[in-house]
Length: 247
Image (tube, rainbow, N blue to C red; front, side, top):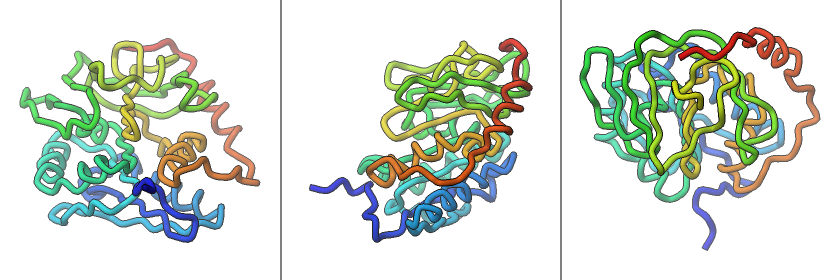
């Protein structure tokens, strides 16, 4: 039986931008535009469906994106997603999910906001988050595991949370600069569900990560693009992040 999460070449890749009205800090919605462009540049149709607060979450999409947000928005979002479990149903059949910052924490088992309230997450990543002693702000560089690529990830972080992973998830890799999860690692991965603290938008700054997500959703790695990548920007950001990691 064909994998239902795979999109045939003659069919549009269906991207879901989840709650951009409340999870939209630091231009994280731009990740959807990056994915749509990189798909269309390869001659494959792609659609972006915005799923706003109060709307049912469809379970039929191929790739779901969640962005960052403040504590109140994060609590509102997780309550909505528990009440409308289309995303969870999509993951059960193999769809891919990418969450940034608050989106990462929502995908985990639970998170505690700065007011001390603990919220149950979606449980798609084995990661729990509690507030740290001080806010992590600045550039981050992550040396990713080989399965995720060969180039380090770069991004910008601004969060108070410190995330501890359980045995059901593994980090994206060790932090070379910045804070990330707060234990020397960054992000979390379980199957085709990936969470990170990196803004940027992170997929604009890391095209290989964008193509990894597309490969999961299309069923095969996408063809190489005959376009110059953002090497100069990556090198500038790597130089900006030469400060040692902060905790």
